[in-house]
Length: 583
Image 1 (cartoon, rainbow, N blue to C red):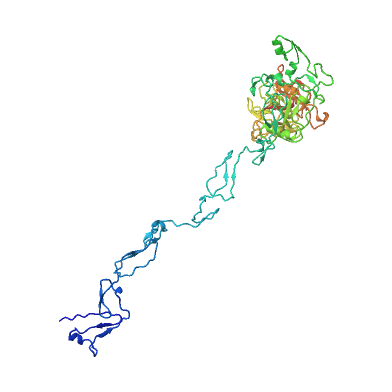
Image 2 (cartoon, rainbow, N blue to C red):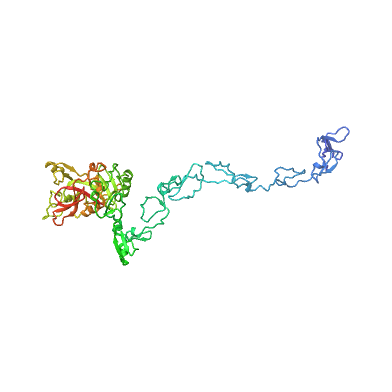
């Protein structure tokens, strides 16, 4: 017979019933004297039905069979967003799970490089806030409404003449500048009393320009219109100014040589020609009068004389009927590369001397002269404004015609001067010349002059003959010229205009004399000590060579009286003053 042993779990006591056990089994236990149940173990916290899985049987502390009521646990999913939640009571057999969940647990909410609950993030972390108006050494993030640039802006300079310049992208810290420039932004381009970008103007506001020719040109400046056009008679024939075709010819520009007092306004030769009356009246000049079948009756211009006044109408030598130009005392014109620039410099420094205006200081149609250079006392160059020719001071006081003119032609039979080495010592290779630097033969400067009047190539010949040698300091190839020429010659430079000099013809002298040359140059006319206003002028030194040969006797050439203005012919071997005319 099999005996079933039942283990009973009783809260507080465990007992075993042996009544139905076999003797062998019973003998293995120790029985108490009454033969009742033996106590094996006492339970401190006996299980209740709720402590035993549902459907599982157990014995109570009284030995009664009971069935557990403890529920079986299931898998749990927490509320969204809760990382911690309660697990319901019950029995869990190890196959169930508890899961927390959050809809925001996605890669787009997790920093790149970080994994949370198996989700790897992909967002870039925010950088520290950027510092405004500074160079941020590390990566940083900006607040809203901020500009970000990797470039620190530099100073901005516009192109010449550009008023607006695009500022390059970048950060500017307040220490850089933006500059616009224009080379034309100078005082000379801006009206007086007007300031543009800090540059005050110097242009004189001349108002309305009277271009009729009736008034003198007031000088450079701003003119706001030309309501009065020039008359055709004031414009050279063949030329047009402001739409007016010119009809003027020589008489319109040349002052009349009819004598007058210096206080009487000069008139042109045309005005003298047209002084008269037409019958019948209407035309104001002979040409139109006679073209219209009128009769022209010439009259004498007011305050002019057709009969000379014995004590007034002279050659101007004494300086009473015509006024000498005051001697300039300040050197001027040097180091300036244009003739006009030199004239402006001289008139700025010697305003009382230049210009000399024959219309107010002459008595017989003289013109205007302007000082071009002064390089020491009586070393001056002047320009005749009527012809535009430049006149030097005397380059030497004593030399023969051949070297004055730069001529080495074979003049055998006509004195034989220029073929002789007594007058042209270098004629085998070159023509020595005081003025001309170019010619039909090779030209070279005159080496110097000897007091005995003989031409030598070097000082030795002169001093050996008992003479005194004066060297010519010119060096044409280096652009070094005499002060009497204003330091100017054919070899021009940035600081000296190129001037082509030559020996004047007798006609050059006659025209220049009519224009007033003897009243202007320092070594013509009366000596300064005998002038009405005493000055340091040397006055006329001697006769002056011209380039014109005397046709009836070709061993002679025409000379000009630098002091009184007459002309004569003298042997070309003689030693006279040499002066140059240039352009």
